[in-house]
Amino acid sequence: MNSLPHDSAISGQAPENTTDFGYKNVPVKEKEQLVRAVFDSVAPKYDIMNDLMSLGIHRVWKKIFITDLRPSPSATLLDLAGGTGDISFGWLGKGGGNAILSDINFSMLSVGRERALERALVSRLEFAVIDAENIALPNGSVERVSMAFGLRNCTNKLAVLKEAYRVLKPGGRFLCLEFSKVAIPPLSPLYDIWSFKVLPEMGALIAKDRESYQYLAESIRMFPNQQTLADMFEEAGFEKVSYQNLSGGIAAIHSGWKL
View (cartoon, rainbow, N blue to C red):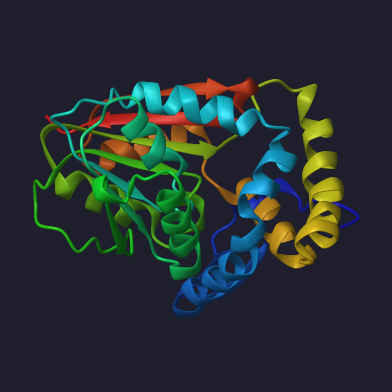
């Protein structure tokens, strides 16, 4: 990709009944299928690519995230878009109660289940194919909801936040770890080169899939910035909303409570 789109192109309203798929506008009904195809493709190399793409820093971010979840043996975690299981495994390893490892993508969830078997954690996990925009759980089911690097791939992000709020018990908390807006201006050009030049080449070389990693880079740029997402948390009903920048805003942890 030779250049990035202008800010106006990114922030402009998509035509009615369409939504973003990276920098493309696609029919709303098609996005879920397109995203599923991306993660079907990347699932076998997902963990290796995460290490390479972030130079291993994603592991530090996830440790901070898991600590912020405040694992407790009396609390149940719903791990949305849990994929290959890092957050659920970390929750259990820090003394959390049982976890529901969920993902809309069966290929990703299958990798997570295999990893759980290797770690002898299956007895403490429930595996579920769940659409985060329409969670098949009753109101007030769990004490914690987590979502790491999944919200940006959802079509209706506000619907996800409202569903997370609905399934939480009073006093429960939702935390979201996601790529965000770089807060250190000198870092932005380097980050753009890494995202749009290096990552797709890595995807082509290692995962044999340049296009999926091009989409993943674009989806990060299309995601709401820190304050916009915090405002969405409040619109969904959450209170005591806050966010914490990680690595200069490359990623951020957003938190909200159901009080």
